[in-house]
Image 1 (cartoon, helix red, strand yellow):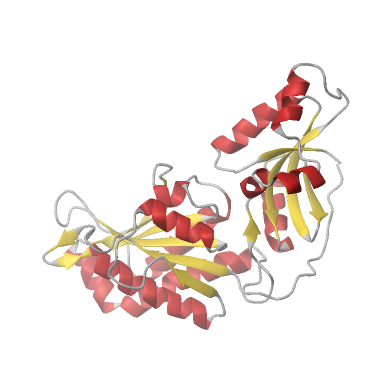
Image 2 (cartoon, one colour):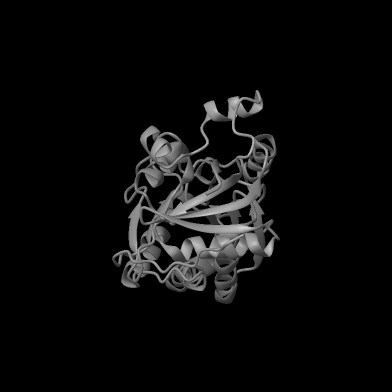
Length: 308
């Protein structure tokens, strides 16, 4: 298997981050002694955004005022923005006051750059004084399941914990700085060079709906898969699983290394200025479809493509 090592030639562009202040409008979220989660979420989200913008990131918000959008609408806002990361900020709550305290960050599944970001954010918040609970998988949350980019949901302490509220109010600026640091450290550690390289990812599932792109680039479409299953196609054809398409080589390289560490043969293929991460080589379409299902269960949006 040849691994193509290509240097990105794109123009400089900041990495884009969507910040989501949880709840809003008539949806107060959790509450405690007159304190509303939606207000804490918005204040902290705007503070984190200011820090990230000062660091050179392109920042957009799902809301900047006390308005309501459904979780699905928020996911769509993130997807329509073509952002690189989605960060949702909330506060936790327990069945009874002062039952629990600490920070927790939620992810769709515990893998990839989102899991790394979640751990880095938790570690930074722990330095501020919060108890670091854990990173937890929550595949049922819409803003984690329906967003096309790496997404995390930060629970910045328990709103019905006097200890966490005291820390939240006394060290509000440090908390915002900690979250921004965790995000920035993740991006820099992945070699994405925030604000210095073009960094917008392209989700493979977007191309599945683009017939011209499929034809011009010789994707294995549903019709060819049916023919292969019926034994009428080219039996010498080989297939790969397309995991992602990226405008920035740093993203492609990051995921290539992740899959190599798991023992997969990986290829970075450059086409029309984009970097495709392809995993495996399969001689049979059925084998490729089984592998694709396995990757999809892990949270990857994938396509089966013909090996070049």
